[in-house]
Length: 527
Image: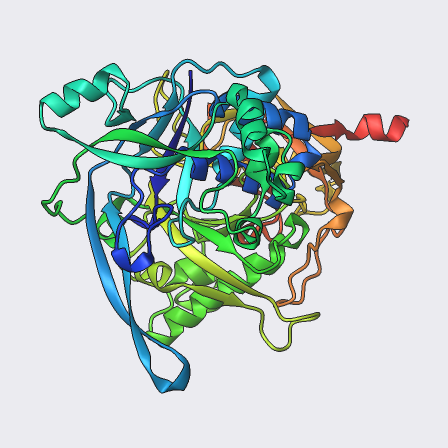
């Protein structure tokens, strides 16, 4: 069994069915098998998965999924549209219908291939590709995708020849829809030979396999006046009828504010930001949050980290203020999200500030070229206190990567030890300082603290020297300018996020909750 689950985090799905005009206001539902395979292929090449997985694995994955028509479990959806009068030449306007489906952001859409079994490398590739699919359909249809581990109890859309289809039609619960799907790989040679008779189309010569046909762009279809992509066919599905009733509106994110102490933003920029520039994003985001709060006349101490009674002094509690943690969720070496975390629940004012944040800019005085990022608030969560141990088998409703409980935490940005090596005449090295910081945060004594020579992200090696470690927005004299990468292991799982050392509130000293490919420092030195 193979399955992928999509959650439309913006609560909307935009996609025009093949062969339909946008002003017909129809929506492709469920997303067609052809669209899903093209999305997997697209992210493979767009996000350089080839550095870790060869094209043979992608070919194997695509052909396996094309060998069976998938079945779907669908969330409740309401068909709606907006109208726009778009400007055209001559100062006139033209009416455009923008049709889409409204869905619950947390309700999954499942796509399942019950009889397909993937080889080990193809399965690993799918697990790598699914979480980095940014959208499905039109670019506004942002998604979070993950690999499903089991089949649902029932399906809501199935090929018309499936047993479930007849039952849905008999109960008047289903309706017929045509979806674009790839032909079976076993049928491709026969169909290609038939299409090639008397044809001079270069696309047929270029596409010797179904996989190569899926790689062809729409420019080829337009140039050769094809009304259907090579290797595609219309497949009739029986789909559960769309609900004509409007579902109850979801509460705003801010309605969850009393219990929230973590916010996660998706980070988007024209040029992907390498993880070595995490401090750029952390500083820019802190400045943006403080700026929004200042315009509203109320900058909470949780943002500044300063004592409200004495603004020149830090908060007495220590590390209770906001951590801004740029993260690389898929460990490819590029930043894709930002976590905003604090130990106590967010105040109402802070949540309002977080919900207002849309863009980040580097100020005019910033060294180097100007940088700009766009942010999308994906949600708010509540993480338990550091000292609370995970219950056996407990499932937490928090994003994986940095918040989940784990026994092992591995550096993804350098740890800059905050104290000098000698303390009261005794040696007090970085490993000792990590243990001391963990103790002060209420975390248990680790089993081991091991320094790493480098980590590997997206096929490249990173050591601490490659990162920018000192803030541009503050003059800093710190004990550790070089920094180091570390691996921490506990006897029992503890909750993240863990960020330690100097500038940990801006993204330095961040640890991934789990193993990251690495080489111990001792091994590097011995070489």
